[in-house]
Image (cartoon, rainbow, N blue to C red):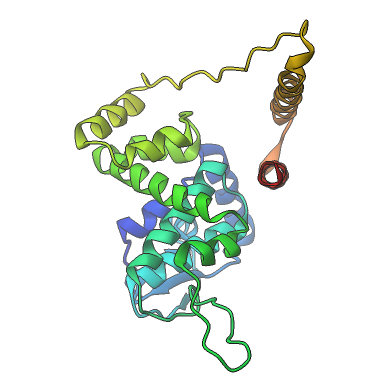
Length: 278
């Protein structure tokens, strides 16, 4: 029987399933068996941790496939790309993975591999300077270069928090605790004492997110027309958020949750496109 190794660093990259979702996956596997193979690299499990755990629990048979990579960074990038392609990630998870991709890619400076080398082909017979890591990943994920660089700081901060409290890191990525991305980005350069403080607060459930303040408007003055527009935009966003929250209460089953996440992510991408057009 093949000996499968669980690598805690790789495992920690994967968003944890909530109890209900894990139970639904377990029941599906018990009824239909394991449809997708467990993916390994040098006997290390890199995809299928939940399926593997269920098979171990119930002593069920499963198939494996082996992937070939030269470095851990390549494996890391493959795991990230696989997770992002499934599209059932929260905005925080997506930012975290993009940031991890950027950091892993930077560690592979000078290396060429099929997951990161996406620079354009030379034109007119001349040599073209390769795109920077930030620009290349910005094209890959269809966001701005600045977003990728901010995500790198965010992922670094989340990992530093995870060193103090893995539970706090899990709460951030799962959305159990609401924390502003800008706050996380700032913590990437904060002293370890401050990082430890916020990690403990998150783990204990005492962390409080700063309230979002709606810009005040003065309807009596024509000079404040732009502020009125901002207020209207805020009202539209808040109404859409409330409507989405109300609809989420009616969701049943894993398929509807996945489809809802895709719809919400599409909405977020649309807003980001509008934002960049301003």
